[in-house]
Image (cartoon, one colour):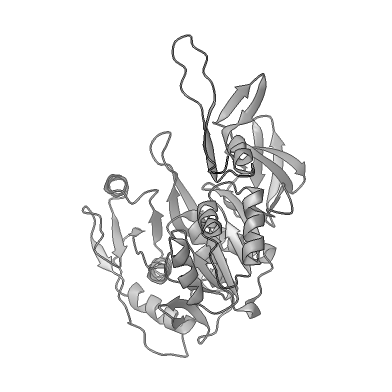
Length: 392
């Protein structure tokens, strides 16, 4: 059976995580994983609700070692958790606080259980093991489960790191403003570090000053994993961030003008990641340098009658794009917006997402969004824009 290591480059003294200015080593991590794995119940699935990024990883890794699958709810709302508990009744919860799912037994992820050892072996996980199940948002119905094998998570992490030019010798540290229970957050702030010998900050800073303080707590070189919303907040606040080698953004389109402001203000490089739950991270681009997206190594694009799809060795079959894309080259595409938000203006079809991005690139616009009201009666329905532009 083919297997892939839980950790990429490994050395017991290498720093994996930073918490309140204190380091946690890879050796410490493996000891914590082994101790927790011995305590876990014999159940097939687990809901990991740990808020601390390091303890989430300990729980995720311990579940992998025990051959279990981690469930990633699309929401932490009690109703959403209760629904998953009903559908996966043989599950249990891992927590690092008081939050829990009433219908399921809960287990605390212990703190400080490690014992120094030089003989720890890096677990080898079967590549076809269903490492996690991520759920879509359920905006069009019940949340849909999407299973991810360990092999697919490893392949995406390795390919993303290669694309960004990450080297084990760089000793890069990730600070992330996104939750680790989200696919983007898990791929960029958990899988990327452990597969490339990097470190990460355990917290999740929210406001610009939080981001500055979190970056200041970790050594250089640094990578900021974030969203357009957080980038805009830091740019607007003119934050004096410690130097970051690069900024990685996802979850929403990033206006080119904002990316340019961030690169100038923070003296860094800004990259975007495009992906969706069914396939994970798919492509990247340097926002200020190109409009097209370059797919990760191993992914191939295909134009079909119903639209574009992609294939990869770690996927079970072709995956259709949920968004409107047009192929430019064998491994590049243009993104036009979501297939469900098309509007017709004067006989020309456009996407609300694309219009929103163009609106936010207008000089003087701090934020803005287009809205199409529902049609009522015989009156003409017109597109409306809500714009924040104090100087206009």
